[in-house]
Amino acid sequence: MILYLRNETGKTIVDIELWTKTEYESDGDKHSFIEISCSIDIAHYSFLLLDISNQSPDKLGQAIADFSELSEIRGWMWENYFMVKKNTPEEYNGVLTEVRKTLDTIGKRYNLRLIED
Figure 1 (tube, rainbow, N blue to C red):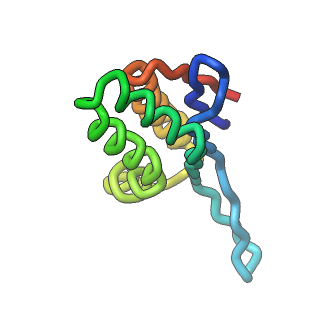
Figure 2 (spheres, rainbow, N blue to C red; figure 1 turned 90 degrees about the vertical axis):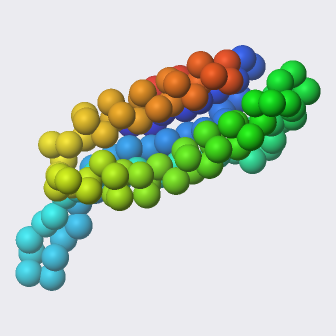
């Protein structure tokens, strides 16, 4: 699944991909687990920051922190979400729910739409 945060003109600011990955061991066994990646479009993100600094300069630090957090979402998944449980395909919906919550919160804060593909 791919989740996007897009601005009012449909430009993608953030794109997060969540999938189940399977690796095969040398003995033929396979190991499946959840993976996640985040991409932030630097041009569209920069224009968003310019808009924020013009409209609400006091929110600029929060915006930088929010998008920095998103850029580290893979670390969050491995170091926080899977700190107390095993990374298995059965956890996919749990990770997806948490990612949606985070994107929804950030999206509302900066007037961005959450789109799923």
